[in-house]
Amino acid sequence: MTILPKYIRNTGKPWTNKDLEQLETLAEHDTPTPVIGLKLGRTVAAVYGQASKQGISLMPPNPHHKKR
Image (cartoon, rainbow, N blue to C red; front, side, top):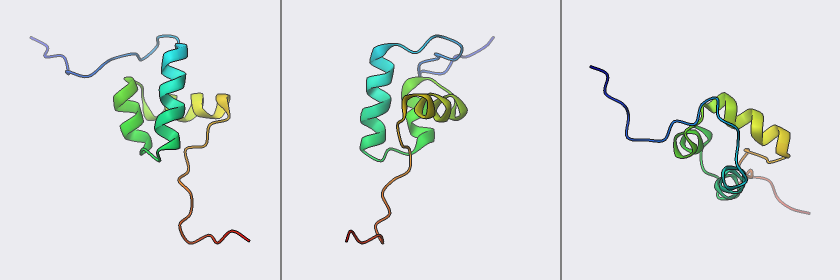
């Protein structure tokens, strides 16, 4: 018997507008990419790929960088 995880599985499914909005919101809040993947039911690779397609940065701001 296979026990399914309690999180969403969207692997292989098309990204919805709601998925993209959530991706953008999570990225803006500096959520770690693996956590974004779990929340969206996607692999880390899929999250990186879709973020790149949408022009969404997954890199948190550098706290040591001083604005001039």
